[in-house]
Length: 357
Image (tube, rainbow, N blue to C red; front, side, top):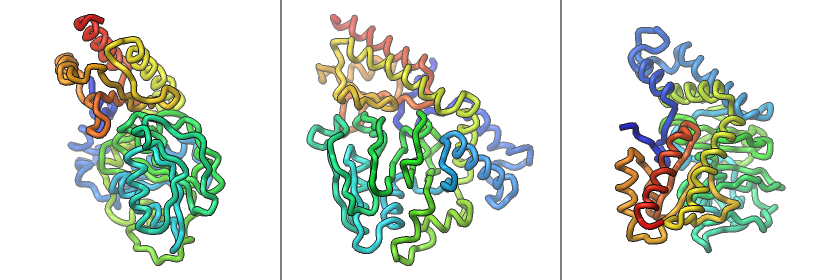
């Protein structure tokens, strides 16, 4: 039976990427060596890194001069690394609080300086994204999370920030065209739309660095990795290679503009059924519904286990919601085909008919 993987991350990647990555584990680039054993200082891996950086810049249409880094530690490491590099002693970071990940970023930033919250949607369990707020002009940077994997909201219109803007784009980067010129730093864990867990993408405007007055530890200083082309220490060789394969696939498919078309089609298909089927409902404000991580619930919550088993028997995996939000979450990243979404929609329709819909 074919499985349909709606996992929030690590998530589905293109089959061609799996196949190429598997082949490289046995024999990378006809070297007679596995990708797992080659030196990160070899010319072959230099080529992997160079092409990966070039494709990120091309696919995202990054402004001239922006640096692309492949680090480790996941997006969670950036909750600390960003304020460490951007907050001077006595400095302040301003946040738009839209979910768990922004809340965690706030906690870590408070260890390096002051924090202020421009707005928060915590009052309604992060089911919407605030729009009426003022960014603290006295802060050193303004931080947003563009997509919230747990509560299923997505920020489609970015604020006009009077101070440098930082974004956690872990779960929607490469899913649609975005204007990166409005950001000075962007970070993303790879394990959604880019590759496997283990690599962390950072995009930074170097003009904002080196202003804290701190003597930064080398391993946590962005300028260290800029100078060394992400090779200051041994990088995540295999995850970065898989990222390269995914970036090649993305370009061959038509880039982020094509991904947006597909992601709109997939999300429209699922949300239409959520709204049509009287057994289900969506708990997120419609204008803020995420294309990447739609969330929904059964009106009769006592039947959630029954529905979970029903869809599992049809090969649908990974749709149980996060423990903080409950219900169901169908993560639909770039590599998930619309055919899998149709299988889920058909299962929802069948479940409805079986239960008097």
